[in-house]
Image (cartoon, rainbow, N blue to C red; front, side, top):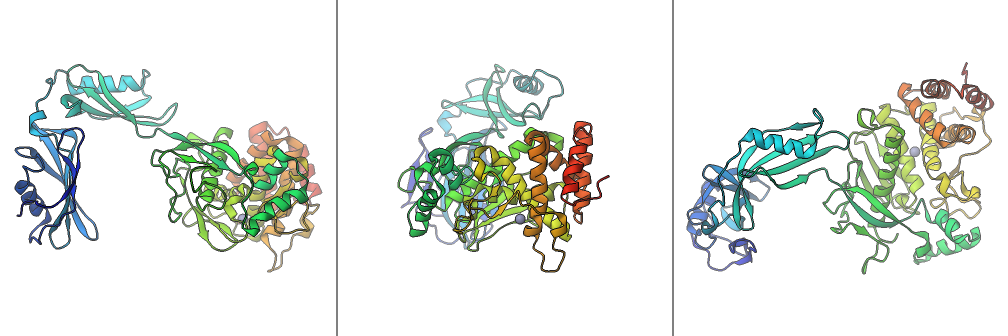
Length: 517
Ligand SMILES: [Zn+2]
C-alpha cells in the first residue's frame, strides 16, 4: 500500500489531526474493501495521527460507486464518543478519501475513572427527564469515553423516551465518576423559522390590509401576468413552527421532501427580502413554504379540536410535492398518501385555500380509507375540501369575500366578483344533483359545501367544525348525502348531547337531503 504524497486536508480544530483528507486517489488494489482500508490506514498512520490507536471496524456501507468502511476508536475496551475513522474506496479498489475523528495518542489519557455503575447512571438520566413514575422509558446505559475539552471523561450514554406532556427522545451522557449530566439532547426537539407567506392569498390580504376596491386589487395583482411581482403588502410574516433542524421544510406533520430541488435554509428564514433571491411568489421555493406553513397549522388545529395522541388523524408527516406538475391542477394521492401541487395558471400552492382543500381529501382518506368512490361520496369529498378551507380562513376575510373559495386561483376570470373557483353559499338543493355520467363532482359538491356552510353559520365554527369532522368516522367510501347528514346528527348527539339536532334537520330538509329522521 502506498504512502500518501499529494493530497488536500481539512485540519481538525480539536486534536490537530487532519479531519478530512481528500484530493488523492491510490492505485487500484485487489481484495476485500475492509482489507484495503486496513492496509491504507496502517501505511498512513503517521500522517493521520492514528499510530497505535485501537480502531474497530463497525460498518461497511456499499453505495453504487464505492465502499465506505467505518471504524470506531476504542480505549480500554470501550468506545470513544464520535471517534470515527471512515475510509472511502471507489470501485476498482482506489482509496480516495478518509474522514478522521479519532483522538490522537497523546490525548488518550482519561481524566478520571468510572465510579458509578450502569444502574445509577440510568436512574440519574431518567430523573433528569421526569420525576413521575411511568411517564418515561429508560434504556440500558452504555459505558464509553466522552471527549470534553480535549480530555476523555468516563461516561454512560443513556436513552430516555417520554410520551407526555410532549413526546421526547433524549440522549443523555452521564459522567461516570460524578454522575452529573455531561450533555443532553432531545432528538425530537423542534425549532421555529420565519417566513413571508400569503394568508390565505394575496387577494384576501390586500383587501384586508389595504382596503382597496376590487378592480384596483385586480390591477395590482394582474401585474404578475406581465411579469411583475405581487406587491409586498400582500405578504404576511409568520412563524414556521415545528421544523426539525435539517434546514429543510420538514416537521412531524408535513414534509416537502417530494419536491425536486427543495429549498434548504439552515437559519430557517424564508423571507421576502432575504438576499438576492428573496422568498417571494416568483421563487419556486415559495410554494414549498406555503404548503409547509398552512398544512402544519391546519393539522395543529385538528389536534387542538382533540384529534391528537391516540385520536390523531395523521400518524406521520404528509409528504408534499409543491411543484409537481406544469398543469393547472392539484391532488391527493391515496396510494402514496401524498399531496401534489401544480404550476399551471396561478401556482396552486400560492392559494392556501387550494392547499387546505387538498388536505381535506387527505383528512377524509385518513379517517375513512378510500373515501369518495361513489358519485355522492366524491361530491362530498369536494364539498368538504372547499368547506374545510373556507371555514379555516373565514375570520381573515372581509364579508364580501367570506364564502368565495380560492379567490387567488380564480383571479383570471374578470367577470367574477368576488373572484373565486367556487362559492360556498349557492342556492342549490339536492334536486339539482347531476347523477348523469357527465356529472361533475366539484359542481355537485357545491350542494354539500353550501349545506356545511349553513351549519357553520347557524351553529358557529366551534360547533360546526368538530361535528363535521367527527361525522366521517362512521362513513365509508361509498356513502351518500343522506348518510353523511345522519352522521353529522349522530356526531352532535355524541359531542353535544344532540343539542343542535332540530336545527340540523331543518337545514338538511331545506337542502332536500335525507331522510334524516
Ligand atoms: Zn378536490
